[in-house]
Amino acid sequence: MVRQQAFYMPWFANLESSEHLTDHERLLTFTRDAGPLGHEPGQFLQVSVLGVGEAPLSVCSAPREQAFQVCVTDKGHVSHALHKLGPGDKVGMRGPYGQGFPVGRFAGGDVLLVAGGVGMAPLRCLLGSLLSRREDYGRIILVYGARNPGCLLFKKDLDAWGRSGEVEVHCIVDHADDTWTGPEGVVTDPLADLELDPENTRVAMVGPPAVFRFAGAALLERGISGNDIYLSLERRFQCGIGKCGHCQLNDLYICRDGPVFSWSFLKNRPEATELGQ
Image (cartoon, rainbow, N blue to C red; front, side, top):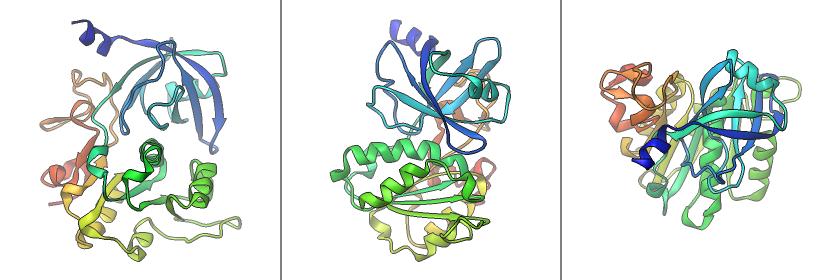
C-alpha cells in the first residue's frame, strides 16, 4: 500500500540550472532530496508550477545520475512559467511514469536511434544509458533531423558523441542556412545510405508521425523486423496514470501502456501514428 501511495505522491524538485538550447527550448537540471530519479529511458514526469498547472515532460538525462534533466519547449502556460524559473526555485513533480524503451533487448546488437525535432530529448536519455554500458552493444547510430540548424538540440553533445567515435552521428536539416555545412533534406535520406545488418539491428524512434511513417517504412523495406522497431508516441497526458482518459487511443492509454510501443504492436492501429496497415 505504501508503494502504491508513493506512485501517486507528488514531490518537490530543486532547479539547479537553466540553459538555452535554442530560441524556444531550455534544458532544466534538477535534483531532489530523495536522491537519483531512478527512471528508465523513455519515461516521463508530470511537472507542475504552483499556481499555473502541470505538464508532461520526458526525462532527457541518463539514468543513475544524481541530477536529472528535462527539455522544455516554450509553447504553453506551464512551459512558459518553467522558462522563467532560475536556480534555487522549486517545482512539483510526479513520476517517473510510463513504459520506456526495452534496453535489455538492445544488448548484443546494433542500435539505431532516429530522432525528429524535439524527439531528440528522450533519445538523449536512451543514448546516455547505452553509453554507460557501451561494451554491451555493437554499432550505435544516431540519425537526427530538424527543421533548420537553429532547431538542433544538444549541439555540444552531438559534437562530443561524434568525436568520441562511440556513436555514428548523422544530422540533417530541412532548410539549411549560411552556417550549415551538413546535408539538407529529410531524415530518411541518411537512412538510405546506411549499411545496416537487418537481423541484428534494434531501432528506437521518436518524432512526429511523418518520421514514424516514412522512416519506419524505409527500415521495414531494409528487412528490419517490426518487432525490433520501437516508437515513442507524443500525447497530451493529463493525469499520467491512465485514469482521466485524455490520452486514450481506442483500447490504449498512452501514458500507462506506453509511450513506447513496438511497430508490430501498433501496425493495426493506424490512428496511433498514421502508420497505415
